[in-house]
Image 1 (cartoon, rainbow, N blue to C red):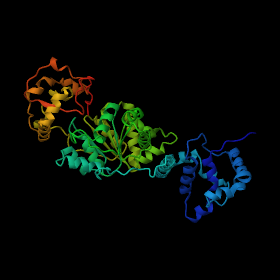
Image 2 (image 1 turned 45 degrees about the vertical axis):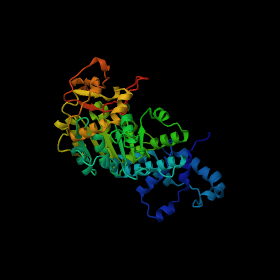
Image 3 (image 1 turned 90 degrees about the horizontal axis):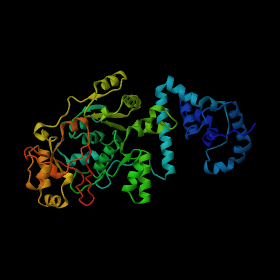
Amino acid sequence: PGYIEIPHEVLSLLAVNEDILDRDGYRNDDKIILYNCIGFSHVRDFFNIGPDEENYLKEICRLDLNQNLQLVQKDFPCVKEFKYTNKIRKYFGLNNIHRMYNTNKDLFYRYIKIKGLLNRLDYAASAMFDSIEISPKDDKTGLYLYEIIKKAYPQLRDIQNFMYNNSDKNLVVIGSTGIGKTEACCLWMKEDKMFYTLPLKVAINAIYERLSIEDPRGYDYGYGYKKATLIHSDMIGYYMNLIKNKDDLYVKITEAKQFQSPLSVSTVDQLFTFVFKYQGFEVPLSTLAYSKVVIDELQMYDAEIVAYLLYGLKMITDMGGKFSIVTATLPKIFTIFLEDLKIPFTQAPKVYKRLKNEAKEMFRNIFNYNAIPREIYDTLIKDGTIERWKKDIQNGRKLEVIEEIKDYIVPLPEKAMKKGLLIEFPNKNEFKHSLDDVYICTAHYYYDEEEHTGQGLVID
């Protein structure tokens, strides 16, 4: 009646020696995990062994595999024979996985961990990588990211101290914009693996650059942590503009796709698709089971995505992973859902806000750092003005305002920050403003008069 196509990973089940498994004390649950990890090691349209497949496997053993056993033993001397037994049909199949999920969640999660890590090892070997994980220590300094941040800012803010001192817990933290939430999350990360998620790709790019790019102007502009990777739908194009060497480009993209980096900045759709339990969902979930996940700006997701996040957080925490919800706005209903789902979490003891003497007027009058011409910027660097401003910001003092920059002070509409809108600063000649209570809004790049681009400012 024709041939039946049997995937090679299913043929591998014929080499499993039941006597050795029994001798080594494998229980039925162990065998179910072993057989399904082998049989489903690749994504195929082959889910169960029926009577026709059973007869065909027996014929393959008799007419092919055992006839060429010596060839197989050159590479795999442990294989003594190929043999089909009824136990293969008993232990292998999608029906067994469904049964695990419905009746024994602990066994199901154990299967996910083993299957997911087995897949990652297979992918790493195919890509010629030595390991599925990259050391979290920075190559240049030999420090973890949290150590780099502590070195840059010995005096931590309240939100940063709270997350650093509760790095072993799931956290829900509310803090105003500009309070230092990103650094707080990296301190919470400590020596673990972390995925930092945001809803907007432009914000993800900005956070990634801030963490990974080393800027000579100091830590305010970049920490130079090269171990970080970017994960979103446009990451290949982003990296092609950033990395010109093809080999380095391949390595960076592969590291991102295979979750090898100790710190990944990502959109949630690149991680939380495992909630749909598609073929291969074990890879992200098994990785998140020993990682930390940050969900920033939760209020920007609609109800459907929040439902996926809640279900995903339940699975992650059940398997041993940790999460932090870090946001400027948190609907009360979200913590109620966490409690209803019995997801353990610790809520911060207060809402963290900027100190009055630090930034009371910061969002009313802003100096457009991007717009100053190159010659003024260079002058401010040389005479130490920029450095004095940075120290004043850190110490909460009113900033010294000099004549050269007064034309670049613009009022920022109050509704803009409430709505979370990106602001396009006006032409410098359209606004004049009092020099009282002016604070500085710094960005990564200064204005290029030739190209007329003011890149670098995004809401963080």
